[in-house]
Image 1 (cartoon, rainbow, N blue to C red):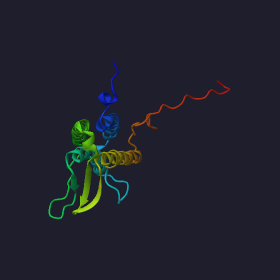
Image 2 (image 1 turned 90 degrees about the vertical axis):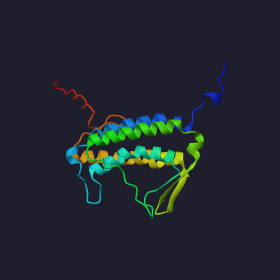
Image 3 (image 1 turned 90 degrees about the horizontal axis):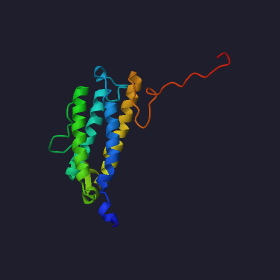
Image 4 (image 1 turned 120 degrees about the vertical axis):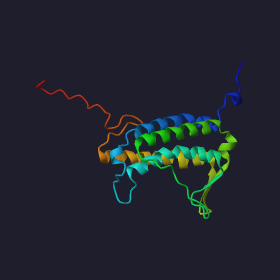
Length: 187
């Protein structure tokens, strides 16, 4: 008996899980290499520190959960406290926070219905709307792409600090085996 498409179709959230899992594995590989002794280093006065950037990357999966469980966020409300991310001071704390955020985000994404994904979500600052977009667009742009962008910045920090950069979509220059020496006429 043939199974109809409706019986086998995945939700939008379920379709995102493969990509989510792959990006979170790659992100963890990057965060595992954060050097505690360079936590406060930054490449320029206008740049964030290694610790700030790594913490931001580690917290971004939690934004997926927040996006799916709320209708809006005012990160600087006029009459209330501003959004404050968790204070992370070392790699051990970073990995624990990241792992917690990934597990919660994966569960929220896997349980989201298509209707949940298409519902508008609003970002505000001081009561003023910055944007409203479907949750799925917020997950893709403000969570996934945002995380990948900052993860890449962190790998540049690693290069500047001479920390081996992990391969993410294939081997990195630090993981490649040098090619064998070419044979010469004297061999």
